[in-house]
Amino acid sequence: MKKSLFLYLFIIAVLMNIFTYMYFSKRTSYEETHSANTITKFKDSLNVMGNKLSEVDYFSLENNQNAQAYFDNSDLRTYPSYHDLAEVVKAKLIALNDDPNGNPYVGQAQLGEQKFIINKAKVLNHRWIIADFSDGEYWGEVLLKYFINADDTVSFEIVQSVIYQKTTA
Image (cartoon, rainbow, N blue to C red; front, side, top):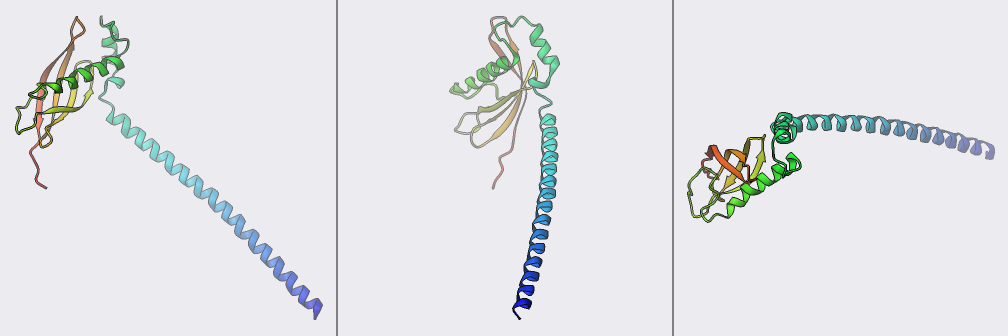
């Protein structure tokens, strides 16, 4: 009886070891394939987002080599790079928000109590800027031409301005 009990316990222990070994080996291979699939999905997502970002950023001074060459060939030695120039142009445009009547380059007359100010601007190339403006109630966008004058001042000219209709929520 004692021998058969030890035999049964031995067989049960061997079976438990076999099942445990199989479980952990399958689990390890599953985790490896699952992590490889997850990494592949993340790489694909990064590629898709990178493509979308490059498509969105197509119209920008940073990606427009012709506009960059324009600045490289000009007499604007005050600005060491087009990055610095773009930041200066945006800063000068947004600094015009301090005007008591609002920014004069939004292309819209004041509609309410608040003045229109430019919230965000993007330098598209060596000549154009697109900007977003609002007065807290109405929103719009404006396309501007900009010029760097010989005395390193910046002048702006409105090309087109649009204001969106007020939506009721």
